[in-house]
Length: 228
Image (cartoon, rainbow, N blue to C red):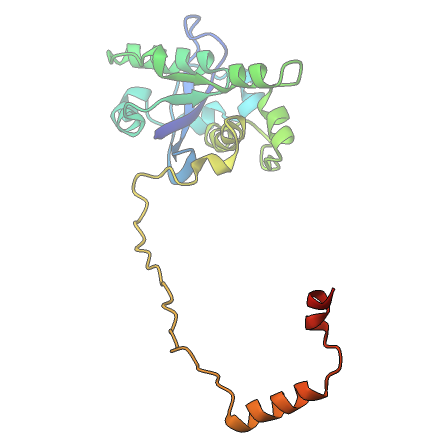
């Protein structure tokens, strides 16, 4: 099964309020194992970056000035997403911005039925615990040492590891790949060698010696029961 884990960075918290997406990072999973394929892009929001948003992700107006508009890379993004389920942390936020940008491009919005929210999964599996991405990385031993600032691709890569752990761990992918190579197995059966039966027969000398010995035995045990 193919799935896409993704994350976005934005100018703020409200697309209807005028905020825009400035970065998206996507990681491809197959049977919940990373394939190494990713999609990553920055976008010029055509509006100033608020200081509080820049403090979160570090993306400045100067950095984004020469980046393309969202509509320039939308075809490549949609091709990468395909029709796979889309996994995000607090997914309604990321879906809101992704579908908002698609709407501005006059493209069909992505169905909510494709949305998988790791925040809701974490809350149901670990009620009462902390459910931020940092907290989940700590819970599952995912190395987040590079996460000085938020970054869409880095956060998607971290979330992909968290998602696998939330769904049962790495062992769930074992044996599920439909393209797994078929291994021809040869079973060796050992055929035992059958030897002909050996004949043990006493010689005449051995029979005579045995008879002579019996003549010397007084009150043999094998006749005690008969005597009684």
